[in-house]
Length: 113
Length: 116
Image 1 (cartoon, one colour):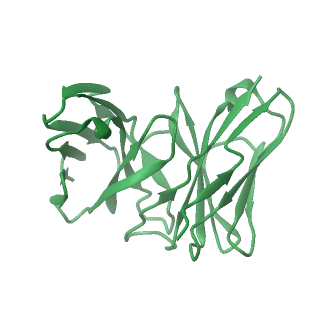
Image 2 (tube, rainbow over the protein chains, first blue to last red; image 1 turned 45 degrees about the vertical axis):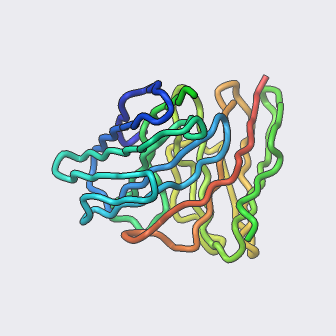
Image 3 (tube, rainbow over the protein chains, first blue to last red; image 1 turned 180 degrees about the vertical axis):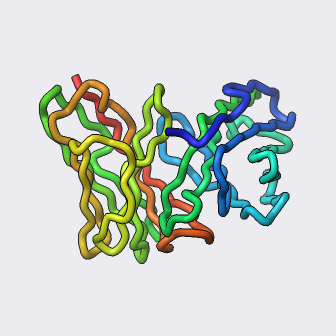
């Protein structure tokens, strides 16, 4: 079963605007990751944030993590048409020596040129 | 370095048949995981291999099996195919064993399986 929910399920914005996606999860984690998936293709790793971190930046991406609320957000600033994709958060399988990822439901982002 | 490769990219089978999917991880990566992606269930973990040993298995029936070879390449097999097995099957590799630290996964392009 999936770890949690992402919202919104779908988001449509204009180029240049910012996009914010939220992810909630259910159990303890060591880290949380965000992945991007272009239509029907493989996933591309965007950023990883550890449970003892509150915020992380990578280029136009900003991720926050609130472990007390079991939630994370991904902000994409100054969006481009090429950012159009589905975005997934994924948590690790806490306590296990495993690479298993537990994915959220995903947010479909459409950036209009 | 070449990325994760999966073959074939597309596959059409009929109910009752079996299928084998292949995954070659990034050179040097010894961990390979498999995921099934469907519109209804999303991304679901199938299994994980490290150094030819299955380390973890998701909640799938025994019709789904896998293995890993000494060169880290992995195959997954689905026997007695059902319509509900139609999905995108994704393989991911990692250089790490996993657990507690950085376990960034590198995904292949996937194999699109259609069961008729």
